[in-house]
Length: 356
Image 1 (cartoon, rainbow, N blue to C red):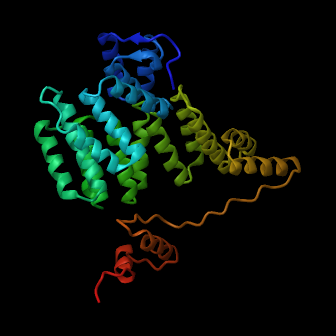
Image 2 (tube, one colour):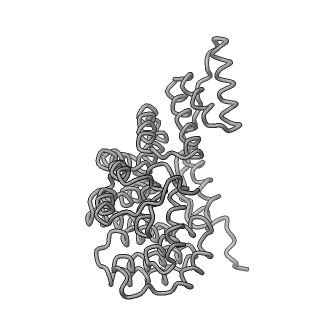
């Protein structure tokens, strides 16, 4: 993915305006202001490329976001924030082991690095360590991050994610809510809090939080999360509107994401009984499954046949803990058949613990 126009040197004052809107969660407005500077792909300078990458992710262009952050790091491999975002993209693309090796190779950030970046760097160590389930070491890094930069909302988010991996959901929720106290309608805190509420089987609270958030911030990620929950709860007309809003917030929509969006819009149109629209979007999804959906729906409508009703068994959600996938599945099925059981008790009963 290469720039398609002449390189642009972004002035600090122009960058500050875009950054302010981005930090307030107003990603579409930030993009509109950024357009006055020039295409994001043409931005040069480490700080400019990092901001372009962060912004692109919310505008329907995750690949562009990764590319811009990678270019920023390649331009200056000693830049503290560029190293941080390089580490984050490594975790997404290559997993925790490669990321941990990168973190150890870089080592401590220099004292002259911005204090919030140093704090984020330490907190990210905790995030990676938690993937290895080394929670004691993770706590040590979180404490160091909080010590050098108290009341940092992002540190609260990293703590919430670590606590989730420990299956400490109430404490995880408290951490994300602390981030919201420090920065109201902070986009990552909204998403993590809503996710944790769902883990706690408090879907209506999650729905309310996300619904309020999309009225205040402009992020396709938040809208997509809301649409998925609305679909899960059977609120298909609301989900249709949310996916349409996602399209509005994604002026840089990339091909793969466009096909994913078409599939989701086909699903919700089908659930709403709008079969012609479901066919149109299914064809845009460009996968064998949705091609078949489009073909069969089109044939039935052409013949004037009734579309069979959707059958959905109300099997509830049971959150699995570490390596308790099968017990959680059994607990969900038991709940459906009115014979509820705690999935951890099932795990203790069926899993060999090494005792002779």
